[in-house]
Length: 125
Image 1 (tube, rainbow, N blue to C red):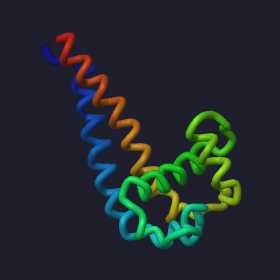
Image 2 (spheres, rainbow, N blue to C red; image 1 turned 90 degrees about the vertical axis):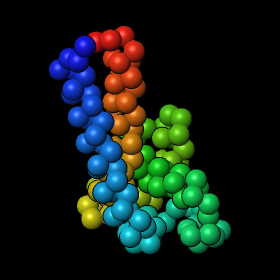
Image 3 (cartoon, helix red, strand yellow; image 1 turned 180 degrees about the horizontal axis):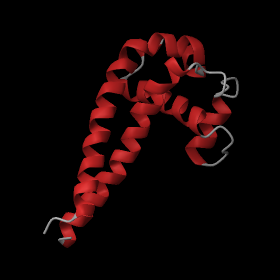
């Protein structure tokens, strides 16, 4: 019933969960430094802490898209690049970059791993 591919998918999912948790904790404590450096346009209207959690997460997702896909003009990634043209990914310090990339990268990769794991459990691989 259990295959090496299923073990790998579960291991990847578990690793993504741990990475997301640790990066999220660091991101929580560094959010003021990150916002001061990257300066999202929404922060001109209100301070970061006054936004609901969903909008705070979307601001961090915009930072992730800008840092990881700076030349893309498609869909949400393109919108993030239009909102944050002043952010230069190569000049952004690694100390501010890794919590964002670790959190959102592990969320997206973990989502894919979870879908693969559920498909494998469903088909009995």
